[in-house]
Amino acid sequence: MTSLFDPLTLRGLTVRNRVFLPPMCTYQVEAGDGVPTDWHLVHYGARAAGGFGLIIAEAAGVLPEGRITPGCTGFWNDAQAEAWARIARFAHSQGAAFGIQLQHSGRKGSVYRDLPGQPSGSVPLAEGGWETVGPTDEAFPGLAAPRVATLADIAAIKQAFVDAAVRADHAGLDTIQLHAAHGYLLFQFLSPLCNKRTDEYGGDFAGRTRLLLETVAAVREVWPDSKPLMVRISASEWVDDGWSAEDSIELAKLLGGLGVDMIDVSSGGNIITKIPSYPGYQVPLAREVAKGGVPVSAVGQILDGPQAQEILDDGVIAAVSIGRAALRDPGWPVRAGHELGIDYQQLPYSPSYVRGRF
Image (cartoon, rainbow, N blue to C red; front, top):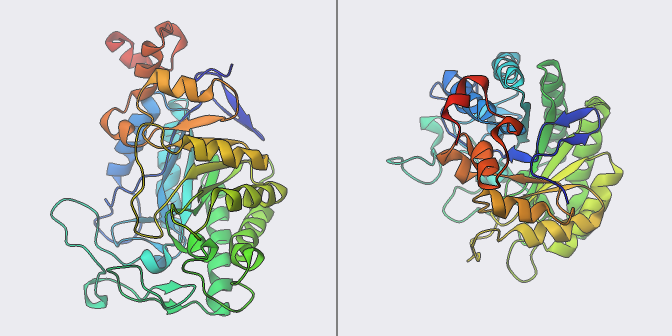
């Protein structure tokens, strides 16, 4: 039985427990320059002090037009990297490992921030928006149509992921996660429902996976051998004829062969459809993807310690990612340990918080 509080070693990185904070957009870059601020330091620092083993910070655009909103973070310049390095140093001081999700939003970019009181839809160019790109010129429902990504665009996007990875290494981050989920650019190319290209980046499974696989291979070339490389995927689109769990298993085999060390398994986001949602609803998908031979982490309404421990019990899933529950409770890991009856001395309490133990 794998305990929720067992360490996990991926290449040269040992994470203190199996509780991960997954990337969740916060839309808090008020200046619109992609540079994380004190808000991000406090947000991620609180979860590091709260006992999370690995924090994977929110989607950071590898290009300005790779952001989802003007309020999103980036990793395309040194000022952004220096700001992330500060946050990583604080996370390390609290015993947590720290990584970043590298992202290109594709046709789902240039939208208003998903915050209360904000409008919805695409941000006009006159208000700080930008022209988006996609595998075709088909728009995501309710958003402006993208232009078709040319081969030159594709080459530039791959290079931007490589450049961001180099910056992340120099900034002292422990891992990077490439975002190939939720209908953003890398997943747009994977999906047979929106990738209707007829060149080498479309068509059959090999063509539709080409962009992701080439990006992974190029990033692995510059990302240190001692550091793990992760990928997040949507394992299913939840519609007939869409990307499926079977496709994800085959993709996992290919990713493992390219040096990917962990796959975070989510679902949906590319097609508007009804997704059955209940506690642990995506865990069966993670179990399927694990058949591809790469360690997986599971996410999706994981609410408390006993549920998280049960997910890990048979050893198929290596870690759990606690998303919305972590927004409510920065100290979720120590609460989970208390729920499991673990002595507080064995839990990742920050020394200053021991007096407030459960």
